Length: 345
Ligand code: SF4
Image (cartoon, rainbow, N blue to C red):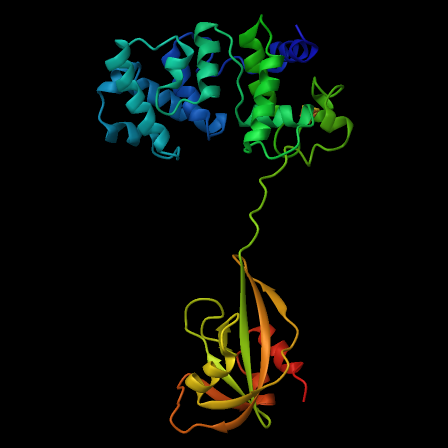
């Protein structure tokens, strides 16, 4: 047996959890229900729900025969209700397709709704003593830290590497103690924040501990780059006055005064004429500046334009001409105030 597994098993015997309500049983149904409940919920929160659920639905036949409403009612408060719907549907499949006997075949277990490879492995190991490697969220964290596996564990490449490790490390004996040890270590010692490295049985070989990288691993989910948007803002200048326009009440800068805008590459002079009745001369554009919103990045090109004459027919009710000082004092978004303050004379 490899050293990693041996130390984990020795630790589990002394420090692991041995008396949870779903331990010390070989009943695949009881193990399955616990594994599904534990998928997104902590042990302490699961225990009470588990006991009540098992009282009401003591076996797969009882669960299959119940209505979905009642199953959901017993799940109420645990969250992620698709777990309960899948459990119910899978119980009916066990009754219909497997004669009410939970399948032992690893592939058949995985074909049941809501059971992925790791959950199937836990059921197979705990109920049937048929060793299969597990890799739930806690175990991924232990492996990523101990073996310095870079990359977010949700990425296929990283996950593949973690599964390979899970397969290589799995011992041929004492599989139940090993699997339970991995789960316990991930849940109680190698926790997301403040892991108990000082008392961890793996610390002599743990790459993250030895290289002071525990806080960095596993790598976080990469942030998606923010979408980019570019606009031109019209700086219509008539003597000392500039034109401001009120923004719609919803959307960015809703209800504030701002400069009129056109999409990047749009015809500024046509927009000035058609929207504001202004014949203009284009002046050199000011430097582009970028404003970052939570959901996108806006590149703004301020385009100064001098008024040659006002056309009488055009009236824009949402637009006003204000002296530069008045404009700076209006309810403006900060970047627009900055543009006006820096506007050359
Ligand atoms: S030494 Fe720390 S980081 Fe490494 S496996 Fe143990 S608890 Fe996790």
